Image (cartoon, rainbow, N blue to C red; front, side, top):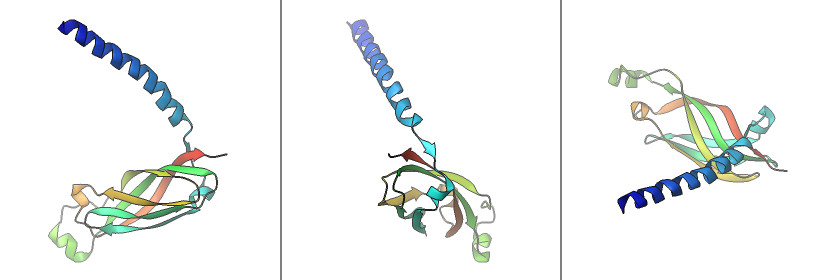
Length: 136
């Protein structure tokens, strides 16, 4: 009895994965890195507080659906902060922020900061890459 149940589970999982993997690849294959002129049409009002990077983003593009931001964040340490945490990193780290932002729409940004920099009050940040798919 146990062997039949195990076989059914494996069989169902195999069928499900055979259906899901091509569907996922088909969706992912339509993703592109947005050109610089499209990135310039994003309006981001965001900041740091309580260990979170958060704010709003407006997609000013008419024909790109935004799915992800790749952001570089470099901790900014004031003199007082460095005395409290002398071993804290000064290096930039790259973070991925997943989105589902249709053309000409506004959405929320929110990302918990890693614990090693959660006490940092400010960062120099910049967008490295934006991915999405083109809408015709």
